[in-house]
Image (cartoon, rainbow, N blue to C red; front, side, top):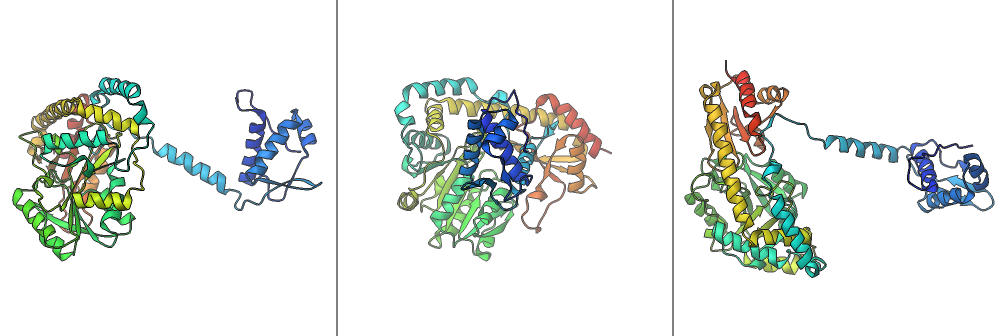
Length: 467
C-alpha cells in the first residue's frame, strides 16, 4: 500500500498534496506504467484522510493524463514515455536558476549595469502614480503595433532637439529591446538579403542575424569605420553600424566616410544602413556627433536606439525610425504584431521625456560619468600603470581602451584578473574572424564601477602589469 506523509506547514489542500506525491512518483518512475493504484476507500483509510480527498486527487491526475480507469477494475498509471523526463527537466530548470546568480566582482569592466543610486526612482514613482490616475482609459486599450502615439511623439521631439533628426511619430516603432526590432527588420527588408556587421563588433548582433538563418558577413574596419570596399566584396545589401561611437574600438566615423556609405547605399535598390546610435547621449567632451540619419536624403538609413544605456539595462524599451516608405510597408505587412512594451511603461516613459525629466537625467548622468572617468584616469595616471599602458577613445560613451605592454596573452590577463575579482574583456574577443586582431588592448567599461573600489582595483592591475 502506498504511504505518504502530509506536511502540516503546507498550506495547499490535502488533495493537492496527494496529487503532487503521486504525480512526482509517476514522473520519477517509482510508479511504473500499468501499475494499479489502491481503491479510493482503502487508500483513504491507510492515509487517514477522507475518501473525497483521494477522489479529488485521482480526478486531477486522470484529467492531466497521469492515470486512467478501467470499469470495475480500478485506477492505473498511464505510460507517459520516459518516466525520468519530467524530473530531469525540473532539475535543469533549477540549475538554470542557480546560474542566473551573478558573481560579485571588485570591478566588472564588462558590465553595462547602472548604479541604483543613479536611477531617478522618485520621479519615476511620481509619474507612475500620475499615469495610474490620469491615463486609466489608455492603459486598458491595446496599443498600436508600433507603440502608443504619446511615446512616439515624445521620442520624435527628443530626436529633433538632441540629434537633429526630424521625423514624424508615424515613422517610429517601439519594441522591447533592439533584439526584437532586428527580427522585425529582417521580415521587413527580406530574409534573402545579405546583412553585414562590423568586425570587430558586438557579438550579439551577429548571433541574432545568424539565428534567423540569413546570410551575414563580417566586414573589416579601418581607422574611419567600416570599409566600403569590404561591403562591395562581400555583396552586402544591409549593413549594421554604430558610426557615432563604435563598440568596442570607440571609433567615430568621420563625415567623409558617412557620405561614402550613403553613396554606397544609393547605388542599388534595396540597400539600407542600420544606424545603431546606442550611446550617443554620452559624448563627454564637445557636442554630440550628428547622426547619419540626419544627413540622409534618399531614405536609406534606419535609425535605432534604446533606453537601456541612458536609464537602466533592465528598462527593455527600444525604438527604430523607419524611412517613410518602409514605415508604410511596415503597417501594410507587419501591423498584425502586438507591441511588446506594456502601455503602462510607455505612458510613464512618454511623460518622463515630455516633461523634461529625460533631458535633465541625461545631463546629470553625463556629468556623473565624466567625473567618474576623470577620477579613474587620474588614478591610473598617478600609478605605476602610467609607464606600461596607454589610454585611448576616452571622450565618448562609458568605456575607453587601455593598451598594455605585457608578455602575457589576452586570455592569460583575463584569467589572472578574474582570480583577483576583476573582470575585463579584450578587443580581440570582439572579432568574429581572426583577420586583423589586435592584442593587449582591453575594453574598460566603467559604468558600474564603484568609486570606493577604484584604488584597490588599480593596485591589483599594477600587481599584474608593473614589473
